[in-house]
Image 1: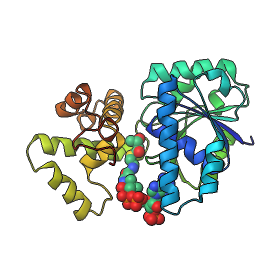
Image 2 (image 1 turned 180 degrees about the vertical axis):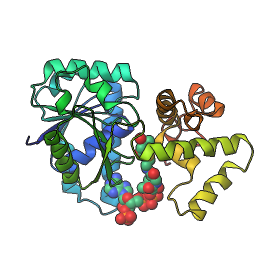
Image 3 (image 1 turned 90 degrees about the vertical axis):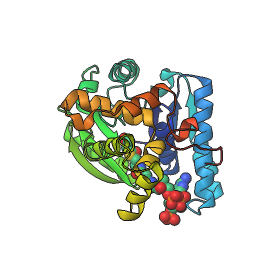
Image 4 (image 1 turned 30 degrees about the vertical axis):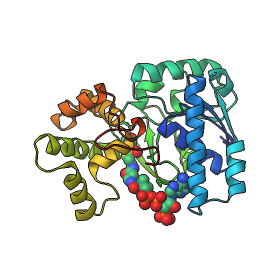
Amino acid sequence: MGITRVGVVGCGLMGSGIAEACARSGYAVVVREVSEELLAKGLARVEQSMQRGVQRGKLASDEARAARARITGTTRLDDLAEVDLIIEAVVENMPLKQEVFRELDRRCPPSTIFASNTSSLSITEMASVTSRRDRFLGMHFFNPVPVMKLVELVRGLQTVDPTMTAGRRFAESLGKTVVVCKDSPGFIVNFLLVPYLLDAVRALEKGVATKEDIDAAVQLGLAHPMGPLTLLDYVGIDTTYYIAEAMFQEFKDPRYAAPPLMKQMVLAGLHGRKSGRGFYEYTKEG
Ligand code: 3HC
């Protein structure tokens, strides 16, 4: 199961980071978005991130140029027919993800491994619409992908050992540390993280403290790199809301029920850093 060519479906925050990390590690990458506009936006994000990497001394400018040249953008799923591994990073919506995999399953040879970067949805359920349930796994990256060192590898009910081994080798070749978990909503990180983030919003709703003080308390009192409301803006309030909803549907546990303020912010388009405003406001410079 040698992997040299990687397909990434979706070039949003996660998809663009995954495409960048793969290209920086020498893989030829085909990344697909639904429109030319979204594709251009995603590829611009890759370039900005690589420039940041160059400025921070993490990669030489000729390496950045070479990595960028390894990425091909497309709006056609047909262009993913010849890759060895596909990593799906579209929005957290099961019917949409299943539709993507159903279409890819028709186009790709049986040897292509399918992976989903889902944060909370069932790998087994996604794999069920394909003819390769044994060569299907979860590969959950963290934002910002080029910086964060973890990948959660998720074994679906029918995923076989060689698929897990290929997934591990691939993730490690990107410089990531792998943890393995079963197909359980939220896997390890979001099982723990989501209730904490929702509690931070509840604390704000209840007037426990200002947003700045909630963030400062966690950042300085617990030595986290970001406070929870800043992290919500960073990950995306919409993304976290969809993750929480999916986990609530599975567990029916109120710890995963998104607070009303979050729902209102999603409906109002206050999605965090990417939309210019969430709990905080962001200028172009950040
Ligand atoms: N390429 C390579 N390296 C980069 C880079 C890039 N584009 N941009 C930054 N870096 C490196 C820097 O060189 C620096 O490395 P060093 O520590 O060796 O010097 C390091 O990354 C930190 O970068 P900066 O100094 O520019 O920035 P900050 O110190 O402000 O850190 C941050 C930014 C990494 C985003 C930090 O605030 C952080 O870790 N925040 C928390 C992020 C987090 O929790 N992510 C997980 C979210 S949950 C998730 O994704 C799951 C999903 O399912 C919800």
